[in-house]
View: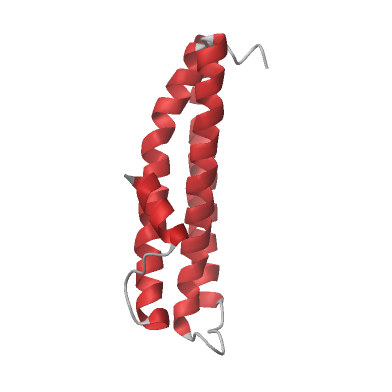
Length: 133
């Protein structure tokens, strides 16, 4: 842990791991999308609209996970004043906002055929929208 806490060492290690991580990410993302969107059967109640849940739910979970990680990194940065925690927190914000936007858009697309409206002012939906702002 202390070895990677040095920003210079972290950068060197991450540059070596980056091509392999990128390749594995693209491979598993495409494989997961194929299984979710083309290989899964339609639901007996929701029909084809259930497939959007394979995108919506992981995006919502990832947005909340990233924002929670940002809270921990901010505390770590404020208490121990470590520059790497501040850098990771700043770089996580647009990623969390992207996942939140994906969750809001796919939720609205799912809500139209299911609820008959694009948006309802439910507490959970509104709190995620405020989180996005």
